[in-house]
Length: 132
Image (cartoon, rainbow, N blue to C red; front, side, top):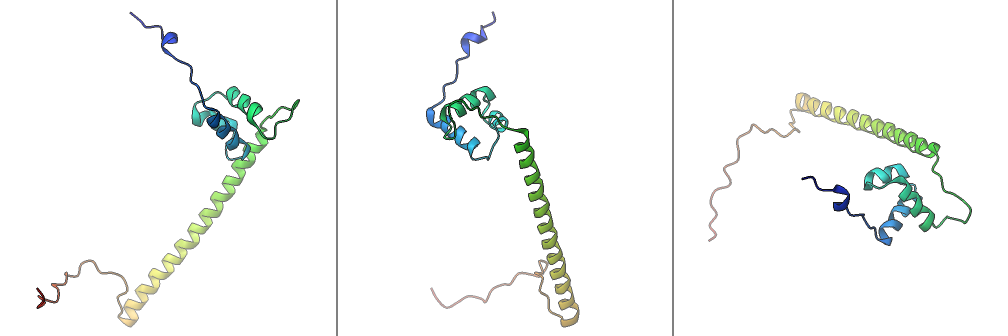
């Protein structure tokens, strides 16, 4: 016997604080309506209704619509940030290579081993002390 799934499924109820938090995230520009929808498993219409109801920028007679340009602008900004981080990682790698080469030169020319040598035997300690 199959159960009627519609009778088992209960509608979700959200607190006012949760709705306002969603609207605040949208207004802050951190997430788009589509991202909020996927993140919280909510319908976009529901989020737009909450924006209309709780938005601090909402004026009567105006409708808030998210433009595709704003999401593409966010993507471009994130791509720019990724390029900057890749550039920084490249610079750090150059510094690491330089320092490793300097350690090799110090070992060869000055006979100073700066790198930690893991295959050296452990110290046996300084022996027993006279304290009890």
